[in-house]
Image (cartoon, rainbow, N blue to C red; front, side, top):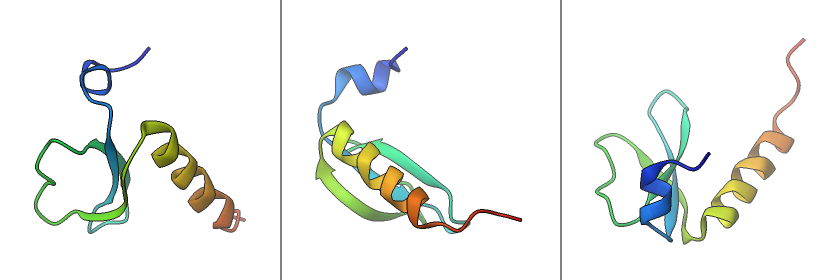
Length: 62
């Protein structure tokens, strides 16, 4: 199920919080204080692909 925010917007950003949490964020909304843009403005799929690539680069926890 797609969120109402995702349905209302077509361009997105990938953000990272000060604690290292990632989020796909609608590009039309203000970036929350402390969060940094690490990808975009791009399609939702492009942002999801970027997150997938980041996860693929992460070593597996023991």
